[in-house]
Length: 319
Image (tube, rainbow, N blue to C red; front, side):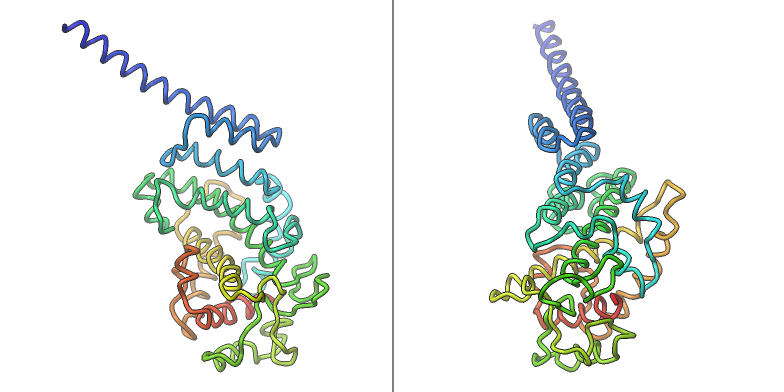
């Protein structure tokens, strides 16, 4: 009886070790497939061992399969884009819109945007958490693993936010808002309802001329975004505006909490000071929306309040 019990215990231990090894091997295999940009093959390998929601190495690989489909490359980010990042409040958004892959987003549902969003969400919500924050990820994974996920998510957020800014802001290759090739010629990120209850706050934000807000100003009315963010469905319009707000707020949460291990990130370190303060300043003119890091939470906010936040934060600093 004792021998049988010991044998059963041994089998159990071997079985657990085997499962762990299978997961590790699957991650290695997926990373190898990703080097050949076999995005779907890599995800299929990871799916075979079951989704590992608290395994940071697995989550990084899984996120990379979506990023692969979105034509994202960390190598491209470092070699072509990071050196051109402008951490100043007036230059940051334009520098993101000028990233080498920002022009890939050509519609509101472009996979180059939506797939990269899936990659980012994979990293932001480990262990089934429903509210994105560094503190909540720490509680699931610990500080070291969370830092690793945060760094990967940060790079992806910068790239995807650049795509959002370039597309909805109708920016040109230099990142200049309203100067792009969109046939509609929209001059703003969003179509602002200046007849709404927050009329004064929105127009105050956009009333200082091109020096403050670029093409989205009172001398260049109406305040129009592309029809992809000014549809007949108010819920769709809010969702697409919230995509940008959520990307930005997650960027801020990560940048003030992350620890970089390379020497090529001086501009990223400068962002923490410049934009944490900027976000706080923007809330003086509306509700405190800097903590909206989840799409559902953002969409629960009245559109009039989101417009104020967008006008004061995005339009005044994206020129």
